[in-house]
Image 1: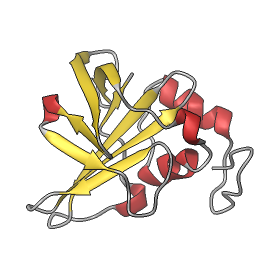
Image 2: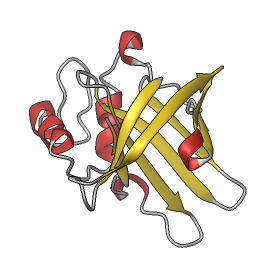
Image 3: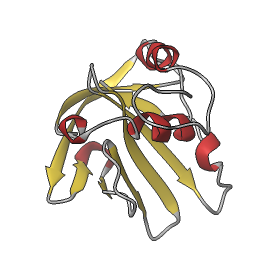
Image 4: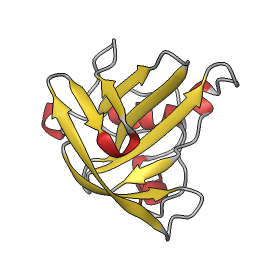
Length: 140
């Protein structure tokens, strides 16, 4: 993906196409979400709020409402009983963690204008797709 304002030359596409995918709730990849988050500045970093959650396999069916809370440097998602923290390499609009069972959770801001977040989950024992992992659901 190619996003204006920052050098993210390791991809190929454009920000409007990415935003259209997010707004139509198509599953984006973790790599695309990372590259988009690199374009965000500190003012676009917030996660707190009450979000409607939609799974990417059935985007027209809301799963419910979920609060997302900031606690210190971590993001708590009580509905999913997980807590993610700022990445080791600080990046605006990104938070992740790995639990004791090898589950990797990531939350990325994928549409700063609308405040949409993408949630990614993987288990390293089952097979790690890395940057090719697709968003499991959107918080909007």
